[in-house]
Length: 360
Image (cartoon, rainbow, N blue to C red; front, top):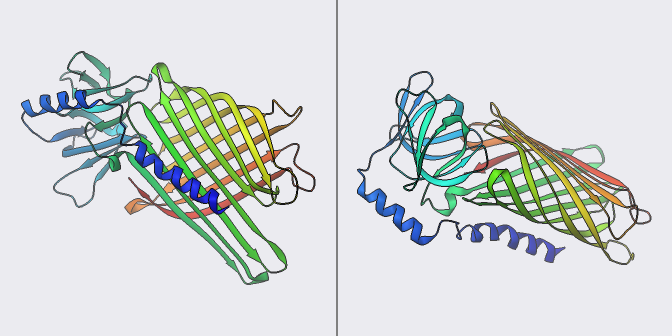
């Protein structure tokens, strides 16, 4: 287990290392920097639907929230994207559109045309609807500006049977121009008089590469250690492709499929085994509901090498944002295997509530 934890930690840190290899070439970036130097440096400005005008520095827009830094506020403004009426800037941005297109461009609202913007890459210029932008970030930002890290903990203490339970979760996402990396590491430790200790760990590293029209390729590794199902470690390595049916400033709904290889080591003397599987997944993320966001995914693994066997993993997270980047989260994880080893349970689930902090 120690080796596994070291491996997961290494893989998680590798998200930040990979982040240094952005898809914008150095030659292209130098060209854009030269173009910017030719222009007069000025502040970004936005006008809200209520008529207010804010002047400052646009740091990022993601999941329907624009982050604006100003000189007259100690903290950054977080503004719902649908509240933005116009935007003006002389900088280049990494931009992702609702239809899946991704490119580098300047962005300025068009006078006399409500909700319309002019995107100019230096080669092509065209009009678009402001609301169709789903991601926005200035070109040339450092690694940390694209990295989001969540850390949360939960604890339960009861006098009855001296119950002590600790849950922890660390997750991170790095979003570049053409690819995204995600990783998480979750643990549940439970101690209670008269009952065997419960230990559970699950981790994941996933990388998506985005194509046009909302298609993407995916590589992923998933790990599970679970006393209830007598798993010392289950390692699943996946490669496949997916498609977003919905991908906008309110929600995303995507699906994917591919091949998987699974290695399983058990707590008892049961011999280790490897199997080949298909996988089918559906993921839903809803984030335009005030301070609340929902994330759920369902993955089905029908076995190729073991006739009649299939597994299912279900994850659900509900997160409520608090001031100062703190949050409260409720999570449900469910694992099912219709052909477990002798003496092991077919399914296991864990429901947790936790308090955490987000770095962005």
